[in-house]
Length: 322
Image 1: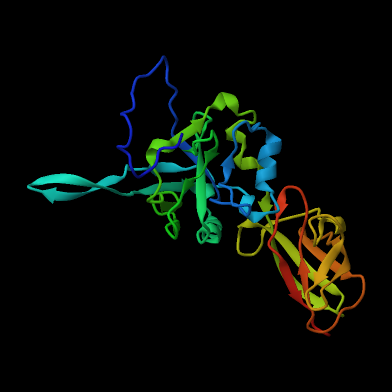
Image 2: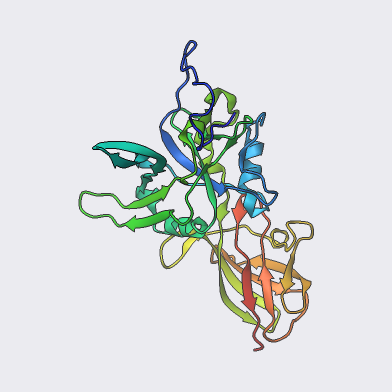
């Protein structure tokens, strides 16, 4: 059953008796974010009976439906999750709970390499979404909310409250990313629950390293209405070049999630166009792409990738007759 936030006094009192050893949830280690509700109208999370193996995780991290995709943040430090406070009204000098709660912010930090300033771009990219969060613990568990049907769903994040702020290193202090959010005011902590580590086939300690790498494309030039020179870099690195993404080949480009490969999409003509690429032998991560036929001046080409272990936003290039 699920415990409602209203009518908490309805029915007979529950017995708090315990039988034997009651497992306890561990401290939060890292967070898994996702849309609270997916495109089918279902609450995101882990359905009852799910085999929590690597295949399940990889499918979640690479789901083509963004409303069903998971994003795993790095390890957290200095975690603070103060309990909600009852709202009260003073009655003859006695504070009487009104039945409402003031939610307190969840606060934590990432530090050192995990607190790279580019990590703020990740948080900024999801903060406008209606988020749920499941946390992995130091005991190897997964904690979230019980929906009353045996499914572990996400803790609902209060809309527009997720915030990430970068703190640069100073003498005696590491670089940090300070993150906070509020739990939705309609959540009832009586429904918090977890999945035991023994029921998780693929250990949660390996989950963060399993997610795809973000690819950042940069156009260097285009010529003759059929040639595009560009670089593919990782999210992290220095201003001169982020970490180059190497070994992409023509079949890694697809406009339809791998149904047809070695193609890009002309936004103006609404047609797919053949696309072959060659990596520069001297400069890692630099590519020259050639269209199957010249297009028209000012046509916008949409370039997408479909390659296991990588993710890239749609890359648009406006062709210029030269």
